[in-house]
Each structure stands twice: as structure tokens, then as C-alpha cells.
Amino acid sequence: MNSKRNISTYILCGGLSSRMHQEKGLVLFKEKPFMAHVIAAVTPITNDIYLVTKNLDYEVFGYPLVSDIYENKGPVGGIYTALNHSKTQYNLILSCDIPNINTSVLQTYLLNQSFEQEEVIYLRDEISEYPLIGLYSKAVESKFHDAIKREDLKLLSLTKSLINKAITVEFEDRYALKNINTKEDLTSLTFLGK
Image 1 (spheres, rainbow, N blue to C red):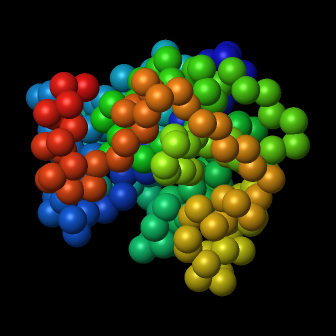
Image 2 (cartoon, rainbow, N blue to C red):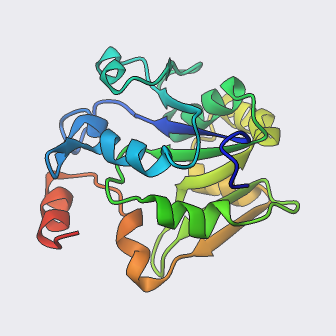
């Protein structure tokens, strides 16, 4: 699955973070917005990159914006929107708040995997699971739609109800997965020098 032609990437921009107190994808890290770091990690992988948001501030990145079909449904709603929009069988779904993500981690742990019967493959470290760093089959679109209709919006629970594979990254790659939710998270990430 390393051809640029057979995978699309959807980056979930989220909204105004209650903990970060600003639009997370536009928070600066190493003098660039989080979104710029995520885009840099995926541009070697695919030409089909979409930002799931209706916030026109993201137009500055030069990629198509896709508005949520169902608003205020969190990541489950964002993934449903992505899968509904997608024309490819496999879709790389990423959150916008992982500024240390890189092409090597995505290639090594996700894109070099072969789908057998899995509906989703996502990453984990020794402590946490990251369903917002994953490959989702378009075939699960209806399951996400059903979850929204049921108001079942816990992404990890939904992911685990699918045919899934969680891949544990090596210890030295764990920082690439860390999502930044607060100013304190951002400060600690900066101090790590990563």
C-alpha cells in the first residue's frame, strides 16, 4: 500500500479546544502550526489530502476542506465524514494535534501493513492507544453512521468493535504519537527537544 494512488488522507481538525483555548491545528510548534507538521508527514505518502473542517482559516494550507456531515459528533463524526467523502478503499485518518508525527512512523507501522480482514489498523504505545492515527477501510462507513445515529460517540470503543489490529510502536517512536491537548502538554513536548 505504498502507492500514492490508492490511499487518501483525512486530517481531523476538530474545533475550538476547551483545554487549549484555541483552534488546535493552528497552534504553533517549532514556529509552524500543528497542521503544517502533520501535512509534512503525509505528503510523501499521498497526493489526496483533505482537512475535515468548516473553518476557512485552514484554507491557508492549500488542501480541500470537507465539512462535517453531522456537527458536534467528535472524531466519530469526523471519520464518518471522511469515509463518506472518500473514493479510495483505504484511508489514513489523523488528528491535527500530533505535531511530532513523521513519514517514517506512518510508513513503518501502518502503510507497510497488509490488510487481511481488518477494518482498521491503528497505532499504540506501551500506555495508550491512538485510533486517530490509523488506516480505515471505507467498508466501515455504515458502521460509523450507525454509531452516530445511536449517539455512540466513543471512538476507541467503536474501533474495538470493528475487526481491528493495534500495532505497538517501538519505544523510541512513542513521541511521534503524542497528541497535545493543553498548553502544559505543549510545554513539556518542547522541553523534550523533540
